Image (tube, rainbow, N blue to C red; front, side, top):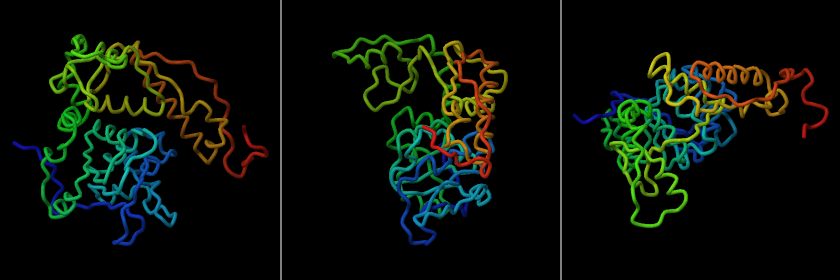
Length: 318
């Protein structure tokens, strides 16, 4: 039986336009900072569902989408212009969209990292605008159409429902089976490193070509505090507790974005410092039961006072 995406008889589609006018053009360059503004990145679970597009800005400078609006509106499809998902490699963006009920994003083009992050959680993306009319008519869309033109690995991950589900199906027994394939032509240093660490799976080639996806064994793995809580939440939701990670001693958890929370003027708006703290704390509590390594971090000064109490500072911080 062919898998399909069902949207129901009267699905709601969210068009991200330059203005509220029905004939306004679609917004180009919708960034991940507009999809999930930095102030909400301390959320990593179902609470993200309230915040997709809350940073979206129309041509007149207004932000028409408030917290909870997408979820309350029952939107299932988002439509936008070119270079959708540009900017920071922010895993929160597709996660917030999917948690709010978005199942498909249609755009003229996508930034690569955003699209891969969407693939990894089973959020479909497409550049086929012909889908809009079909969905509005209540037509079910075959998954084969939604993954047409994607590389074999991306298509397989989407068909599985996301990277974690794909891993449970295909990656449980490949860790020890590193491949050593002779090459008919000279390899670059990068190609040699990839092939020395290549993992063989049922859906990836033993001799991957440029542009094709593959899996490799990593000598060291790193994760920063903005994503540790989300990763732990996703792993627990999919695999339960306790987690048993492969070679946890090779996974290094480090603090990056919140290292200067108490000192940086960019982090001084009301409550921002106070929302960063739980993010870093969740990173630590997620790490401890798994046996992952931790890097040293700077001791944090106290959070600065909110607006109206000593802000802005008399002199600019260098």
